[in-house]
Image (tube, rainbow, N blue to C red; front, side, top):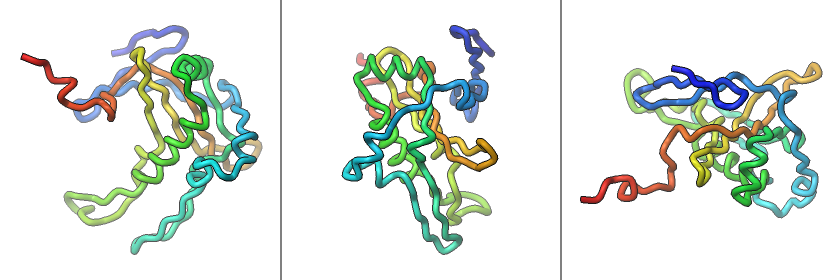
Length: 176
C-alpha cells in the first residue's frame, strides 16, 4: 500500500507484523547542512562521548565513527518539527549516539547464531516521537562524497510508525 504525503511518496511495508514506513532514499544534496561548530568547540558536552565507539569482543575488535559533526544534514520538515518541539539538533545527535552505542552489538538467541555477538543494523536509526503524530528520524548513512568514504547523519521527519518507547502499556490499554 502506498500513499502520497505532501511532495514525497511514502511506502508502507509490513515486517514481522509491524507496519514500517519506507521512504525513498534521501541524499545529503537534498538536505541542509547543520552548523555544529559551537558544539564541536565545547568539549565538555556529552555529545563528544558518542562521536566514536571502540568495541572489543572475543569475536572481533572494531572502532566505529558514530557521528561526524561536519557531516550532519537536516530536512526542512525536520527543522520545523524541531522548532515546534523546542529541541536542538545536538540533543537528537546525543540521543542517536547513545542509542547506537547501546544497541549496536546484539547477541543471537536462537539457531546457529545463539550466543554469537553480531552488529545490529537497526542501531543506525533513532526515532524521536513528537506530540503531533510525527517522529523525527535520525539515521546514520555511510557513502562516498568527493572520492572519500564519509559517515553522514541525516535528520528527517515522517509519520509515526511505531509506539513510543516512553509510553507505558497501561496508558495504551483501554480502561473498563
